[in-house]
Image (tube, rainbow, N blue to C red; front, side, top):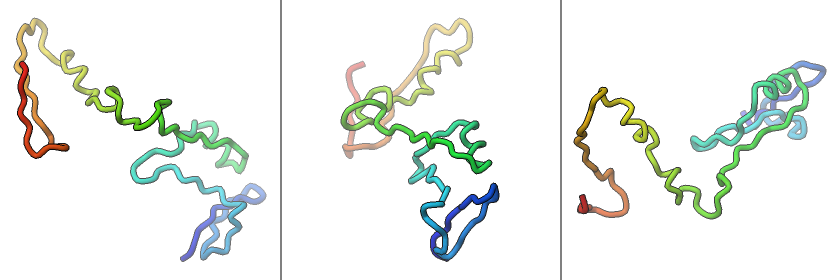
Length: 115
């Protein structure tokens, strides 16, 4: 019931329920939201916090250093596993048959041309 807080006092962890905890002492950190990683801490910092020591929380950058829409970037839009398909071909392969298939998107119909 109510908001939980995770508090450390004298080296001992306590979960305070029903909204009775002190938000200033709350050590809970939101790590994931809507399937996205928000915090990417190293093991050393996690261990420090588990021992009630202060350690910085490493926030994940969501902009990748790019202005605007981060997904308007060829690297972010590539199915990167496909880049290594050639490594799976048997030795001596000289011809490969490939095709393109639309998985949906902005248009109801797609006409592929140009090969």
